[in-house]
Image (cartoon, rainbow, N blue to C red; front, top):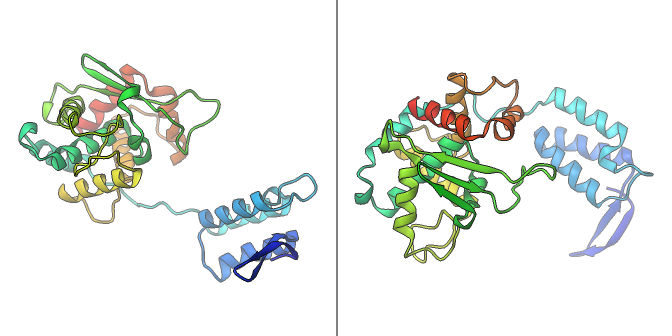
Length: 281
């Protein structure tokens, strides 16, 4: 694609520029020959646009004809939801209730129980849970608050650091996130090599990645009897669906608008209502 070159990579010339027509033909080939989805093609558009010389004063990916092509592609191949339905939170909570007493659980069982309760009661994503740090936490009677110490992929420059507030659930201590979280921190106190909240349950107990958090969530869902096609990220949809059914979050027209929960509704009183809605099923 294109006639400009930066040099040679493994004997193959590397292009740095192309005409808009060539760029559109390439994107079209991704649809007709590669049968790629809309989201994947947007990644190609963005990556090429970043490395490509601007067309006049306009980035290649933002050129009017390219923008019209992408709008047309969106209508022809709209992004499909990963799931047509979600799993019942009560099923997972019933399993978590069975993981008692906490002091008799293996560290692996305690980690799995804690991370699923964290995910369900906060609607947090795996990569957000993975960066929770004890250094940036505030523990009070009946609650535990964490500020995200670093930017995550959905952070915005004009938005303050996100916080996650976890509240006690005295109605049923067996699924109380603060109780499980406290037990987890105490159990790992002499083992952890990091101030990061979630550390591996196997030696040398290093801080875990977002991929490991997702694996923990998926494994716990499997143990709870949730269908195999649901991943760790599905906890977000399941918890928000449970809260929506209790009329505690405004019904959203699309997935992106659920972000308003974090910005406008995540205060102590509403966080408590959200937690009770999820845990009460």
